[in-house]
Image 1 (tube, rainbow, N blue to C red):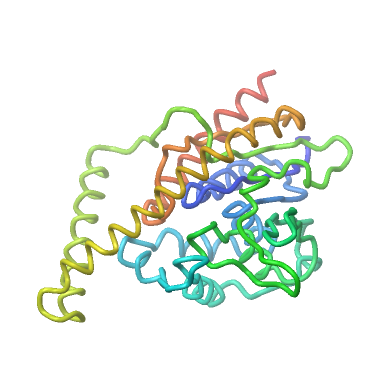
Image 2 (image 1 turned 60 degrees about the vertical axis):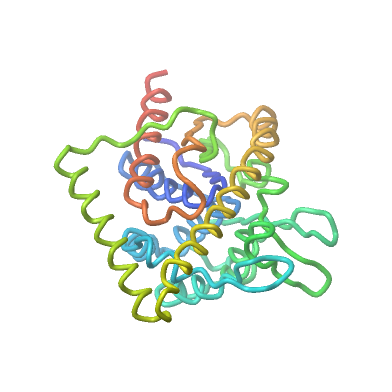
Length: 300
């Protein structure tokens, strides 16, 4: 009988889609996930799993292309963030109803940071939606979440791999997933035919996006608008790389102190923050990394 798992999921933008592949591979091998703790995208995927909505979430992730991702980015002129995040969370509520954390299928915790009071905030009860919204609030990108006496942002600022907040039970297996690891990118194997198919589909989506812009914008504005989007997305990726470097050192120190039984690593260079249109590829990266890590663990 395989041990039950206390699962810890890191933040990392679109790289966090790899967590879906991790969870699927753990379950395929017969491991029972007894609890899940996460930061940012790890809090999102972990919360969806604990709420029993993984299938619908995965289906939505796999349906995203570049145009859909851009349509979910609601830019704002706020001084504390350039994306409100209302559109994406409204969309998510279409198929993931909000729940109370204490009513989830397994124990769950999400980590955010209170800027006003300079401390971590760990959600173990209350609204699952509110917990996730706070935990994913990347500084200077998503607008922070206001509370009665605080201002909540992405938990990765202080604790991107929240091992210390994971609930443990006797003889469990501590499995930590780091999607910001300083390891080489290992792309999932696909056939040449499938690769060409993906390239054709990508080019088609780009052409459709340009046609769409020409229809809704004044003559001559489409190219300018597309360029504006590219600049902003480039800004997001700059922020992502900066935060990734900043949090990586703290994460390494944390894992040295709270040594995991199984460490699953996905390269920080696997994709950029908002590359959600690459969901299928990223998910398979997570699955492949899990196969490698579990094979190593089970052979000991």
